[in-house]
Amino acid sequence: MKILVVYGTKYGSTAAVADDLAAKLRNRGAEVDVFDIKTGNGLEQSSYDHIVLGSSIFVGSWTKEMQDFIAQNNQELNRTPLSYFVCCGDMIFGRSDIEDCHQRYVIDAIHRMGLADPATSAVLGGFFDFSRYGLLVKAVLQARGLPRDMRQNGIDISKPYDFRDWAGVEKLAESIMKY
Ligand SMILES: Cc1cc2nc3c(=O)[nH]c(=O)nc-3n(C[C@H](O)[C@H](O)[C@H](O)COP(=O)(O)O)c2cc1C
Image (cartoon, rainbow, N blue to C red; front, side):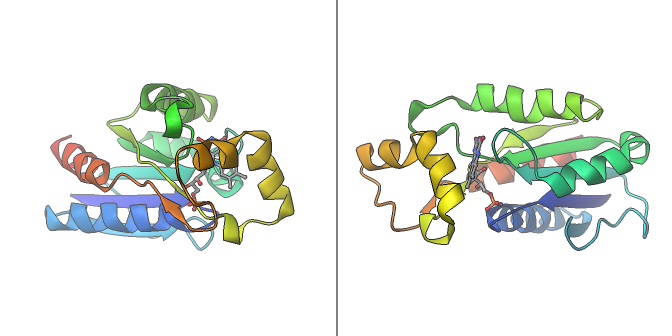
């Protein structure tokens, strides 16, 4: 099976998830191409049996580059079985839950972008690193009460906080291969 994984990221944590997914698919015998949408997408070079689209979530949306790519290649994408994953932070500290994040950031988002229902899909956690954020980004996160919630949960916000779900990546790889 030949699989394309295309992802959008701002700070890089989704890239590691996409690479790990690709490695796990390759371990199961798939041939996999992986693209950060900022550098390419693979669609011009090859045809695929399955396409995985992933993005981190910023203020409720997939990255701008992924939204543009999907808008420009909608028909071609919808001709192939599609799976999706997102990296996001709303599920931590009981702010929301995985099902709600899945509904809003996968199902509602792909419908808004005109994409077909998933073969399979997952919400795979995320990463916060306040040392890398500028004033504006810090203000957005502050307004959402994130630093307060992190401190209340004993997390030192001067250090990176990694809550990516590597077991979930494994499960996603498994279900893509079963599809
Ligand atoms: C400015 C900003 C806004 C964010 N907005 C959301 C959001 O609306 N919902 C959510 O669940 N996570 C949100 N997040 C969390 C990110 O999706 C999470 O940090 C993700 O791991 C970032 O991925 P990246 O490193 O690949 O860019 C936000 C993060 C930042 C820095």
